[in-house]
Amino acid sequence: MDNQKKNFVIMWIANFLVAGSATMIMPFLSLYIETFGNHSDDFVQRWSGLVFGVTFVAALIMSPVWGRIADKYGYKPILVFTAMGIAMSIFLMGFTDTVYELFLLRLFMGIVTGFIPTSLAFISSQTPKESAGRTLGTLQMGSVTGTLFGPVLGGLLADTVGFQYTFILTACAIASASLLVLTGVKERKRTKDHGSHIYKRGTVFQGILHHRLMINVMIISALIQIGNFSIQPLLSLYVAELTAAEDVALLAGVTFSATGVGNLLFARRWGRIGDSIGYEKVLSILLVLACCFIIPQAFVTELWQLIILRFLYGIAVGGMIPTTTALMRREAPIDIQGEVMGYNTSFRFLGNIIGPVFGGFVSGLIGISSVFLVTGSLFVLAFVFLRFTVKQPDQDFEDVLLEQELLKE
Image (cartoon, rainbow, N blue to C red; front, side):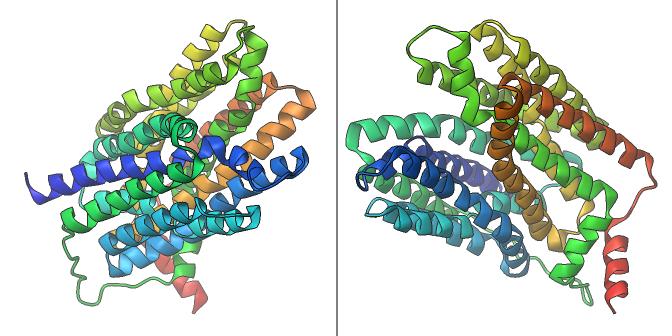
């Protein structure tokens, strides 16, 4: 097995371990907070939201920072450091006594959450542009598979061995991913051309804002996450409206997982199609499909109908992340790909934060089913923006960066 293929296999396994382990603790965070004392329901609910959200807020800020450091010092050290940081924070969560300590550890976890975007940048940097979609789509299958099985396994472990041991076992799984990268990955040192340009952080950020396609794609990344997370906290309530069964939690889990299954099965295929016909075309198709599959979810009358539509929606959404990442690979200079993908990850985390708040506000105002309608309209808006952008004259990202740099002088 050549070095490039070996690196890819290791990163697929590591992504599976990190994504799966990080989501293992999600199902019981609120239950864990209840063990800290005799607190009111309002207290537990408020702090559950804060503890859940603070990780995304910190990760939103830090993702471009880790990307820039990786561009400068290499991807492998950052992969090892961030994985060990996540493992350490989760390990210590098993020994906390107060919700405030848990909040700080979740904050620290957000600060070191840079493994997945760095792994994308690493594999992207050694992947030819013409096959980036297929390769990144396959890599995404690792994290999606982990995300699918993580919450189920975490819930089973919590019921079997208790919260503390679940945190410890989760931390060990992520630490093993770090050791796997440390011992198995061989990163080829990049030699910068003599006189190659070094862009300041502010220049890269301004360049993204002034590059029509790049900023549009990042906004779409945020919209994808808003669409995924807006209904997540409300899904069990919607399922309860559609069925009289008692095991609503299980049925809600199956319904939510249907999206992940569709994502898992088709991510690589969409990436391959993007390599063939162009990423902008594929992204346009996926936005239309996402809209077509999410709007009917507002009008279902049986649970099986919702499950089928969630699966179809997952097929559409599954191609968006590898397609947007492949676009970054095509547009961004290789020396700043980690930072650019870090910004894209920040937009995704922004969607993670906005999604639940947005969904709760809309459902409280005009009902749960309306969340699907509003989210569908967001995909339509994204499609219009993308088509408008594609029809504009092409922009070379390096030219935009140099232009922004000259404006600052």
